View 1 (cartoon, rainbow, N blue to C red):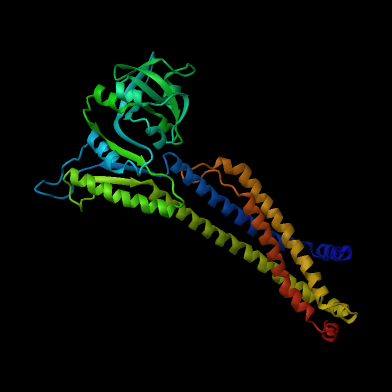
View 2 (cartoon, helix red, strand yellow; view 1 turned 120 degrees about the vertical axis):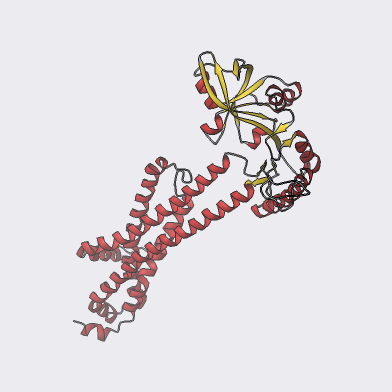
Length: 414
């Protein structure tokens, strides 16, 4: 129940000890500020990790080849394994019902592309239509490579946004011819990629066209595919690991590679990597919570100590109140009001300063694994609840001690 008289007493007590109240509130505000900033950084790390995994599909599995590391069936180590189109066909035949999007890739790391007087060196890739979804590529102009391009060996290309900006500037590239290694190709689309400039510095064409034009025969560099979304990370990870084990055994048998050879065929599972990083960021956020709460606890302990001093100073006043019939809970309420008020006001100041800093400084922070640190509305509400509870706890024990003072002893207090 609101009592104007009680609040006037609180303000009078605070005005008599301005410096002490300021220093007490400063410790609480600092604790809340540290907590908010740490939680903001934790959220920024989560955002950064998500951006890293948005560069490709989060459920993507890629298979690469290397050099054999051990002797097997009379074959010496040091053999380079070369994937062919038949390996992709084998993947589709055996696991087509279990996978979502799929593509084999042939890649040339540097290729000169030019248009009129502009030119640049870009990565050339021959891909299948599903590759758009494996890379999370979004079309901003035209279309992606399709089945007709693959079957008819068309000399159509899709270029990244960076390629478009460098070669065409403000000109519309669709339908224009560019020279790639002295061969003309028609631009049918422009894509953008969450990976930024590095991923947008590509010229893509159908796999069949690239193999034929650049003399690759049936060679491919790697296989990539995704699995359907599952209800949880754990289920997705279990299914992906089971499929990887079967796929690895099948490819090793086909290419006469020892089952214990870990260098000839390499499989990257982004599901496993993403779970590892999300678990890591969750643990870091928990650690930040603990550090922030420890800082806040230090401030709350300071408030509690100050309230003990206040109770000690007002012992005679409390004795007179009790002698005149004041109930113990009214004494508790008197001390709690001041404790909660100081804690809440100073805590809100720390909270507002923290939110303002994150709002204006946060967008400027954009490192590889920290992006746009922020605190959500739910976290802010949680912090407010923590503030109220902390203020109540800080004042309760001194208040209870004051409530148990006997009037006769209090009146004897000097």
